[in-house]
Image (cartoon, rainbow over all chains, first blue to last red; front, side, top):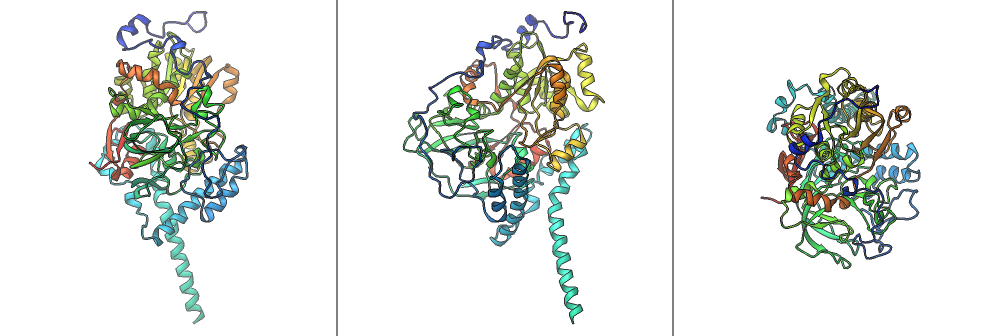
Length: 191
Length: 382
């Protein structure tokens, strides 16, 4: 009864659970739990340095202004490049507490995708919207059967995924078509 | 080498990339023998995580063999079989020496709020991940552990993130004997959180999801009661009714940024990316827990704001606890549990796919096809 001092019987009996669930209660004592207490001083982490040796900075590495200096170790994949790189470098002038920081980075991600579509074409590795979206798995892994009659909540928005997937190609295609048409009409008007 | 490469939202492919090299004296290069696709990889795949750059290789759950070591590596040798925690940690900063390895301050220059993570965008340091033939492992003397002879590789790969994260989710709930625990989300982490809740003495464990096959797994693997939220107009009301209008003692959010249940939030977050994540599951957890109860947040959210019901948190006197799991800290106890048969992580594996089919694997996981719960990726050609 929620309105008296005692809880009503809404949980199972511990003895019954001990018999039914293998390992029930082995970590009942908080002392047996690895993250208790939250902070536990342990100097034996495997580190044999007080401060790690610094990794070489092969190009000006972008960093959050919330860090005092460039961390001694960092990832070196995908350095900023092109327009997206310019936006990213600018975004790192703002602290992590500013929406501008994150929104600029999200914007740079979208620009990066467009840039990569173009460079993919130019370098002979164009993007393939069918294979890269893994659409063959719809056939191999029971696309219809996995969705039909399953009462899934995500069915309401899954069509939007398809729209996002093909939307960029449709938008770019439409823009190219409109541009080409405008140039052609302009040319015929001049004649 | 062959590696999975991100090409933009909902697009990945396998590409040839350079084999990573030693960049710091304590680096190791590991030849990956088994990797996994994690539910949180989907946040990257869907373009939700800021500074996810085209060309990146994902994958923060992997095992492998040490192929090369830097000049200062002392604890590993070439040929050692290792499992690598998803956190990249230096072992010497303020946080690492307090065993808060996921909060390492020396491995992620791009943000101070989170430590480095393999293959998890530049917001987490800009490191490539393990869905590839080879991967660079920084601070090889701190993070990786040799796989014990008795341990199955598929159990090992799940001990790099999913299993310890689920266990840690239950720990954050501060479960006491007889507590009613409600787990939101029956993905791998939710399943391990439910299973671990029993180990900590829960009196009743309820798992909530909308996918019947995952709920079936929650019944089989975690022996939990289950609720499909699509069958209830008002899920919170249902939880209140079955807990005698008191609410659960502990609620665990094992869903995170892409929670279903509200079309509006789905469009705002996953599609328009205007929030750090859909707060639906978290708000259900806040509403479903009893006053003075504990909400454990282990589902991953992005760094932008999310519309969380903080007023209810205050008025109900709730304790909210969360963090990325400091995997290395949990290994000794979890190794013991696996050895004693209390936990069998590999029981949740549903698919094994070659690296060549990585795009299909991501689509299968993202669209929840073929009763997919946990797909493993095999980078080496058979």
